[in-house]
Image (cartoon, rainbow, N blue to C red):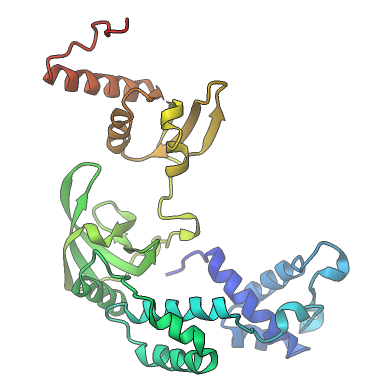
Length: 329
C-alpha cells in the first residue's frame, strides 16, 4: 500500500540526509538511495529541494548539491552538518517526551527508551532531576487495554470491530475498520484506519470508542487507503463537503479561531463573515443555536431554514412565539 509522505516525515529525512551525504562526498546515487531507504527518483527530488535550502537567500547562503554523472556532492551545508548539541531546555524537553513515550501502553521498544533516558540523565545532571519531577499522563481518558489492543491490531494487520460514539449525532455506531496507525495529537489518542461502513479512511478519537474487538480477519487496508497529513490538525475538509457561510457578531468572533474556516471577511462593526466546509451539518446547527443570535447561517439557504425552524421549535416548547416582537421592539 502506497501512502503520501507527510511534510514532517520528509523534513526529518532531509535533516538526516545532509550530514550523511556531507561525510560521503562522491557516493554513487544508486548506493546512496539504497542506504537511505528511498528510490533514486526520490533522492533526485530531495536533492532538488536541498538546492533551494540554506540559512539565507544569497547563492553562498544556500546548500550546494550536485549529482550529475551518477555521484552526489553536497557542500556549503556546515550549519546543519555538525553533530547536534542539546541545550538544557532541549534536553529537558526530550526527557519529558521519552517519559511520555514510555507511558504508551503496548509499546515494544521500552529497552531503547530506557537506554536513551539513562544516557541523557548521565549527561545532563540537573536537567534530569527536573525531568524526574514531571508527571506524564498521556493515556488520560483512554483505557490502557484499549490502546494496547489497537496497537496490536495495527502491528498484526488484524481487522477490528468498533462501537463508536458520534457526538454530532448523539448516537453509537457499529463499524469494521482496517487499522493503519495509532497517533497522539494534542494529548488525545486517535485510531486511523479504513472504515468499511464509510468506504473511506477515517480518524477515530479513542476516548469515544465504547468497545473494540480485534477480529481474526486480515486487516490490510485496500490500496486506495491513504493516511492523512496531520501536520495541520485532525480535521481535513473534503472538496465535496457542504460549503457554509456564517455571519458572526463580535460575541461569536471566536468561532473563526476555534474552527477550521476557509475564508474570513471582517465587517466594519467587528463582525465576521466566514466560510467553512463540513460533511455533517448537525454539529454546525447546534453551534449556531448555542451562539444565541450572535451567529447566523447565510448559505446554503436550506441549512439557514433548518436552523431557523429548529430555533422556533425550541422556543415553542417553552411557550414562546418566535414570530412575536421582542420586549425591546
